[in-house]
Length: 291
Image (cartoon, rainbow, N blue to C red):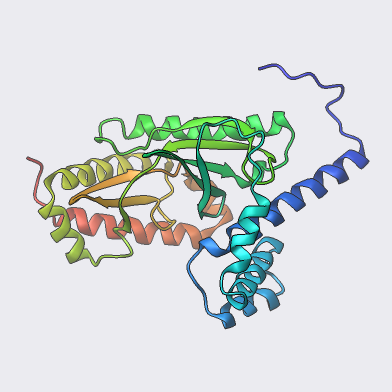
């Protein structure tokens, strides 16, 4: 898609206006998503407010959570109704509600009758010019395609995704987004919610799940040899979904690591990745062979 532009250099006044718009959008997003995370103790929330290195986003989220506790949830309900603007929302949905949030996106549940889907609004694209939002969407689409190709032989592992730029539910602000089918059921993290022995027992009890795990494990370790891999660090990035007695692995997150870059910029995160990889190897080593 071609976009007309008068100049590649934006005047300083326009840059300030853009920065102000982006700050406002991310601040409103922090207020909207604060009640969606796990309930934290008041002391922990106060510590975030007082910590000098806390980001403005985390401070606003902590402040909103504190106020929400004091108002017994009334604040979050009022915020949801006041911050959602669907007048220019392009997707068909009878109901749009905030569902969850991660480090880089806010997730909305889209419902029409019994049909459900999710929209992930990429936070760093909020209120950005259309060209920048399209570039962000394209980057995530490329990562998704790499994941899809890497795990193509693993049955129903990578959740199908569509990428677009749209007027988001948050005040109608322009943003890049990802639309995915909703994954039903209870969500678990096989690395955090189970010991190694419990994970092995679970996988042996569900043959189809075991085949998924073995396929993922093999492809993941192969990808690490090339210097890139799926972001295994975040909770439920490799999601274990339990629905109607069935257990399946799902990848709904498109995060990828470039390992040399990760080593240079975030040794602590790299250490967390290696801890997950060691757990993966321990589980896999105790599983019976395929078949």
